[in-house]
Image (cartoon, rainbow, N blue to C red):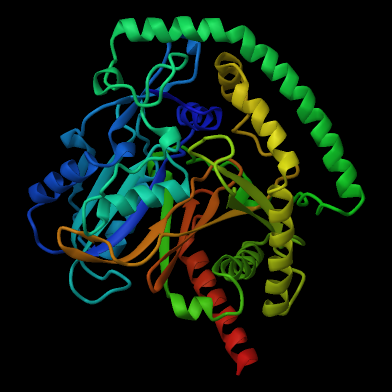
Length: 478
């Protein structure tokens, strides 16, 4: 078995308080193959992907972080949904309901949802489509790792090697040495194994407390040094805070399965990449225009808006499956020229990335990594996730992941496009996913129905804003 990193354990424990699963959407042609054959394919393929044949095992009293143990595929992990109207609006409605659910990683950390014979998909031809959603526990993967898991699942050929980093493989009990002892040991889930793990955790507890204190002091010194370097202008300043808006107030339907709404805008990737900036910056610029106009139309004009942008960290510094930071970026809504605004957003994003990637910031991560599990679990349980502070790191989320070439298949059918839906919460009730696959880029909108009751209005504003950025870029280049 392999013990969870503290960051991943935090994601697991948070899942009992709020919905934070990953939902990776893929639209395929519908080949017409029987669903039983598709289920058999998923069972066979997942058996060769290490990340899809594990579940979590907890210790009594949270004496240590949960551990990954081996498990087999269950038939109920393949779920076929039957819609009263098998069309694109029906899929979007069903997706909204899915996003209000969560998997229990202690039972199985993933599930595959399938919708067959869908009419009116926004890209890829007029034939019927098959909508597929890979639902993953956030303890299992972040956005990049989730994309790698999905690619292994839908690749044209079986993976030669199991998909998992060596440091994340299912290994023997911590403290016994060795990473990949025997298959029998990997499959241990007996009471004796739990007792051994608990005893080892108790023996390590004093050392963890000492290391927490020592690394905490080092983190304090690193924070002071970081402040000095920032004052001297050698490191960019941290992102500014923003005033909460209408999309940052607790919605009455938050946590309700029926409280989620989703929409997708599928764009030509060449057009998106031809706008003079990265895809992320182009979408941030469009979001700045659309959200400003949306709030103004609802009677709440604002002076400033910001977005949180998750950034993957270089390397796996702390051997965690979740290896990213969220950057707070100003959207410069006071700048009327879309291209000048895009330039400013790009510069701000670059500055936030430089700061976020600085080694001094990893000092606090190292403290968290050695914090005894009972202390971290207590902090997670007490964290006020249902309150909105006076100053927030961003008014919305824009999460961007490129998922590679469009060479994926399912049931012998080609893939059309992909999408994804960052989780909403009491602070962020409007989020955006930006996902590239081959020649397409999909901008997905996920909102709480109470905070954004007219998601179609917002989506059309966003679509128009994307066109506006594209047109400005074309006129400038022409």
